[in-house]
Structure formats: C-alpha cells, structure tokens
Amino acid sequence: MGTTIGTIARLFFRRPAQWGAAALLIAAVCCSSPSELTLKKDELLTCAATGAMDGRPGAVVVMDVRTGRIRAMVQEETAVGWAFPPGSLVKLVTAWKGIEEGSFGPETRFVCSGSALLSGIQYQCWYPPGHGDLDLVHAIAYSCNLYFLSLGDRIGPDSTYRALAELGFGKKTGINLPGEEAGRLDPPAEGLGRRYLIGDTDAVTATPVQVITYLSALVNGGSVWVPTVTDTAGEIAAFSPKLARRIDVSRAGPVIVKGMRDAASYGTATNAAVEGHEIMGKTGTGSLLGAPWATHAWFLGFAPAESPEIAVVVFLYRGMGGRDAAPVAREVFRAYFDEDGVP
Ligand SMILES: [Zn+2]
Image (cartoon, rainbow, N blue to C red; front, side):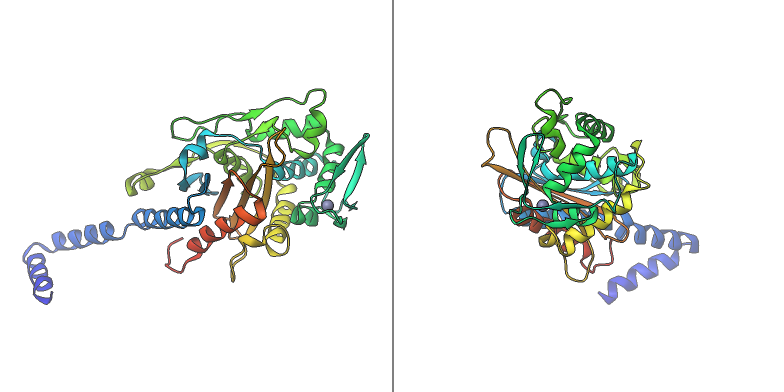
C-alpha cells in the first residue's frame, strides 16, 4: 500500500506541478462528487422503502419537495400507472381552499359527536365516540370526518372540485416515465355533490405520483413541480427543476403544516414518527364505491417538519392509512435521517 502511494506521488511530482494538482482535483471530484453521494442516498431510500413494503402490492414514492426530483420509487407501475381514491388526503385540499377563500380559518370550531345529519343524510366519523370540540389544526391531526364534512359543506362541491383541478388532479404530472395515468376528476353532478363534500369518492382518483406532486405544493410554499426521475450521478448533476405552476398557500400553508406536525406527534400519523426528529404526516383510507369493505391505505408525509426537504407517499392496495401505510414511511424517514452526513 505504502509503495503504491509512493509510486503515485513520485509520478505526480515528476510531472509539471499543475498536472499533479489537476489530477488530484479530478480524483477528488470523481471519488466523492455531491451527485454520487446523492445517488448513494437515493439508493438507501429505495432500499428502506422496498424492505418496509415487504412484498405487499402498492407503491412508495420519495420526492425532493424543493425541486420535484424523485429520490426513490418502489413498484413504479403502480406509482405512475394506477389511480385510486385518495380518501382523507382530500381534507388537506378542502382546508387549503377554504382558508385561502376566507370561508373559514384556523380558529373555526366544530363539535364532533361521532355522527351528524346533513341535508337528510346521516354521516359517521371514523371515531364513533366523537372528537368533541375541535379547531382546524386538531381536525387535521385527528382527521375528523365530520369537521371536514362541515367545511366541505361551507365551501361547496364546486369549490372542492375547482381546488382539486387547480392543483392538477385529473391531469398527468408529466413525469419522465412511460405509462402515466391521468386519474379522474369528474365535475360534481347531481347525487355526486354530497360525496365531494368529504372527498371520499371515486369521482376523484389519483396515482401515488400525482398525490405526492400536487399535495407537496401545500407545504412547500406553493410550487407544483414536474416530477423527474434521475437514474445516474450524471443525470443528478445535470438536473434542473421544472415548475408546472404556482398556487397561493400564503394563508393556508402554515395551518396545514401545523396540522400535519400534530398528526405525527399525537394524531393519526404517529406510526410514521421517528424519535429525535420532527416530521409531518397525513393518513388516508380510501375505498371504491360499492366496495367499502376493501380499503386502500395512504400515507403522505414530509421531513424535516421545520423546513421540508423530502416528501414520502405510501400506497397499499389493502389496509388502513395509520396502521399499515404510516410505518412504511417511518422506515424511509429513518433512512433519510441516518447520520451519514448526506442530506
Ligand atoms: Zn370526528
């Protein structure tokens, strides 16, 4: 070993000085370029997501919320090619639109008693005893169905529909992969309007890539990025973010962030929490009309909570958001926070 280093050193010093310096510089850049370290981290995130899925059908996508660069994607065909009802994740869209429009605010309160009658229809909260008196942050944290039903009623099905359309639902994200599915966003019609109020409807379906792309805009300051896959260190080095559109989240963003932080600390998303770090999360459990017994599980999370860098979406064909999808995201967050000095 010593001989080898000595030989290389002698070779360098026999050449003109600038040659040696240039060669050392090239060697340093090639051996540990930032894009190579980033690629390594992306591989670790993919590995963590694959392990946590444990062969279950579904998908995991990890995206840099500051640029739209995809950092990991597990079960790509499902992630980009299949659309599902997003369930309670739509509550975030209702919260965003209502606050920005001034229809309600973080101080808006509602008493959840477990069930409620609205326009002659009896609705249930997922928590039968009822959540009691809630403000908006707590309603996000506990994902209270009746609170959001009342907010949805306040802004109306048309407004919820327009909010989803403004984010991009029903349209492809433009990700650089083949076979992208656009999902569905049907305008509220007679009979479907009620279902729009709680967003739990197959009038809205979305791929995991659409969910992570569009909903990240609610917490990243309002940027909807074009999600982009980079497979090599060279592609990472050459990558430049592409902005699809901007939305206004100046008033709603901080409230949604607080609600999702609370969800991970005491609400429905605690199964995604990582000790020693603050994250944000929102769970979702979606079902197709006519098959309420077979639920899809969703989890959408961001980290670090203080200033989000990555988003993680987990989708499972069968399961519950908090119980089944959130623990998958926890493993991805753990890998992200791993002390290796690479963000
Ligand atoms: Zn409730």
